[in-house]
Length: 364
Image (cartoon, rainbow, N blue to C red; front, side):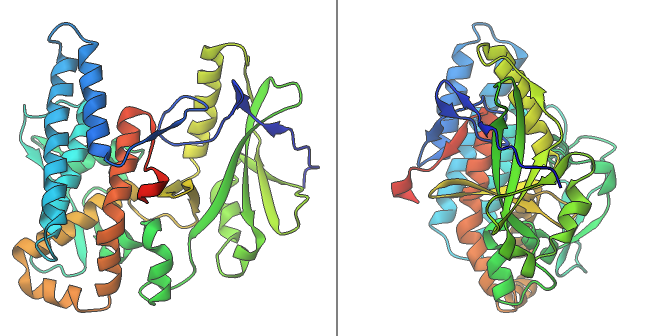
């Protein structure tokens, strides 16, 4: 174990530099909004005003705004509906926001046939099928999976169960274990993430800290297996109630130059992203977890697939709808319907705008 030399929390222009997975600038302030759709529409309008000619990029932004407005309308419709009818507009709110994300990230739509990329075969009850790469057209799910860091070849044509989808949503992780819907050990380990600098303030590194008490009911031995891989090492921690890891990688930077800050911060965040972290938005900001046992899909794709499942059941499978909503999944699905959509919207809008979008504390 390495001796503890704390350094200090990195500061940029007197503001603390925290990790976020959104591609934002270091020490970015929160973009507080109670309506992520309205914020995204305003951002898209601003981006379009910067482009004086009708370019392909401007055309994609215009389409992105259209899909964002659709997403907001579907979400409003869902808020006035009850299950199972609520599930269909919720799925289309998610789907259209994903289309907005894809357009901003360079994928043009409307020019080829578009596929959902997921299906619920007639003999499937508690699972979905992930489509293979289409020979023609665009798979929305495939493109979204790849642009949120996944390798589609590893999941192409696979089945994914409802339980797998639900277990990837940190908002309902504890509830699933409390209701005995999930078995085994908990896998969402809450972490504190600090971006620190050395005494000379010319190198950046990061540290991960978790409460030692979590070792009693989580498979924390998997932390070493999943994360070490030459990226982090355990160091001494003065607080005996905590465990601290530090990155082996240290990135040189010049604190007086913006471009140096941007490059070094991005390098640090890219490595943290590779550790398989997930997050939820709370009244105190974003809270992070390391997924000790990742499933096939990441958190964002699991949310989209979960809504596709519920929407498909609502539209085509009344008998399955009755058994699912009245069975062991009833309470956790009801909770997911209430809590997960807003998390999805804020996370995705943050990824699109590269801003740390959060809800004002008074609204949470």
